[in-house]
Image (cartoon, rainbow, N blue to C red; front, side, top):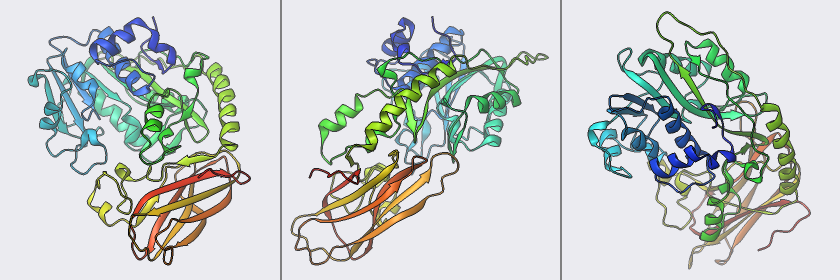
Length: 445
């Protein structure tokens, strides 16, 4: 039987107790997606530790309206769910001005309402008395709350509200490399960073976190924003096929990471176990992933890509592009952004970026669109710069498509996006297409 604390591995989906949680407790068909793994592994850990009891009281942090909270609530006296619920958040799972009603109206299967309670609350400042909960959990929420001081403050608050002997089970993103990727409110932790964080907290790690993964194609690292590649508007087949690809080992830029689960215990009063945490199997996984990343880099550097033009915009919405999607926030209705791709890692070499804009029927275009390439360095803070830009003139095109193109040398230390802003005038487009290709290649139209 696999341990409780560990890194996500495609082989875990073939463990009978993991499959039982996915199918029986979550009510899902097993699929290679790390979010399903997180939910299943958190539930499995709580169950095996004997914490899912009729008298148990638990705390879910950053829980939104996710499936896991309903699965847990069915087994305890009460589960208190906290998140930064807000009617204007871009995360649909927490978009509400009435958290308690929101989670009770959105139940995926029957759960007694008395077992659930939702509150708007910051994970760094838990507004509960000391020693309130038997257990606490979170699923890939910790990495979004700030930086070192915020993480340590969060752990201190969870330790305070747990009863002596209480357990905090959580997943977060683990980078297989030496560095922590410190993007604002979106960290990917290195093993050393987490070991130092746990040592600075008052918690006791329950066990090591094994990091060995099976040498299998299902563990092939793929971009975490894979949806940003090959996206033609209305291409339902492409969207369906992408949804079926493994989402287990991921790439941020050229750096591999995945989810990992940890079990932290509030030691009984008067005790403080100084045991640290290890990450056995890390080197073998690094070797396997490095070889696979080399394969991926060879492919991406010689490939022509059709990129989702609206992938970076909230809800995939642009007021200049026709479609059924609606603005997520009020500012979307005045945003000058015509299109904005996600930031993608493209390896190295000279690449061409092109945009083709097809006007809505019967429209006479006027004004201009400035197209830009933006980039940021994957490691370190996100400081975006613009290494190339051009202007597409819209006027005088007689209702036909307009296009623009840029070329530049891409750097493997950076991720790149292609975007366009309406500089003046106005227009409505039926379709926007963005291509990127090696400078010697030609994108098919």
